[in-house]
Image (cartoon, rainbow over all chains, first blue to last red; front, side, top):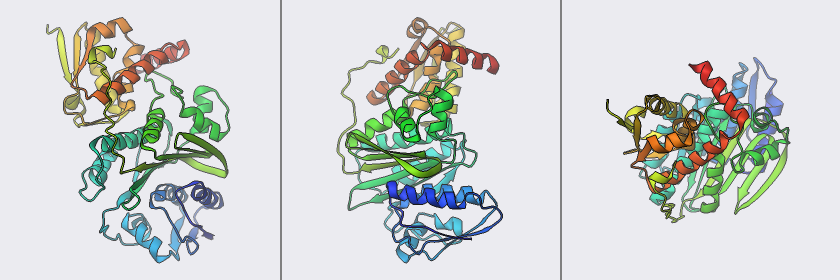
Length: 290
Length: 117
């Protein structure tokens, strides 16, 4: 069976194209599935995380996948970040060091993920010159996203990530995607609110709201992430089920996707030229914490 | 008996990257065991380079489900925290206090704790 993939931008339209592909292919089993990418004239590299998740879901149905007619420029990017290595292509060297490679993790891989971020981002000399405070905040933010996926997604198929640095635009995009139950279902089961998917995402990002039950408290991870994105003047997009939620310049916009995403995608975009120190001037003493 | 125990987070976790809830659980279990023995506990974050709320919720926030605020304030100390990590821990602690004010959650926590023991 053959399916076409459109242009994949790191925004709502890109997620819409991917959920369409998922809806078309999700029932395939023991089939040879060809994804024709001749119309994919642009592919924002961090979106490999969401695309990879959908393809992984598809291959878990014992399908044989083939990506065909990939435009040269797209093929080059997706070969440099290791994405196409999963689909029969050789990995190309990342000469300019602008990729954070595509990877799949299991939920028990917290430490492996942490080492991946350290090795592929923090300690790479070719990565953008960023202030120490910004690097620390970025690192903590992606760890918070990963922890959220580990703690809430209940995914059995894993967690996917990929990033891309744009030196001229002083921008870094990074996405973490899981194939779990999604925020809407978590909010319904954990907090008892049956909300539309985009409102469930909005609920989860606010204040101390948490779907957690049991001995370990929660409810800070997404809040911390939104605070960082606002300070950095970056952008945060969350897609879960049919919900699309975007935070940019202190402004939240939401939308309903035409079809559900099979998990949750968190896409972070940060300004690497940000010189804010991120060191709090707070005089909080250690003895005042408890 | 040594009545002031110092716990090194780095030693317990085995890494300066303290990001996983499971690693936080290991720290929690040590602190909780010592507090139950009536010990004063100092938790040192020396040489820890990354912390997440998930780790701190499990390591420290969780203590508010088993010990009173008064007990924790008098028995537990933290040292060697960077100013922004100090602020993060304070928020984790405030969130935990709020979380355990909800009696249903607390009941669930106790039920889960008794299942685990």
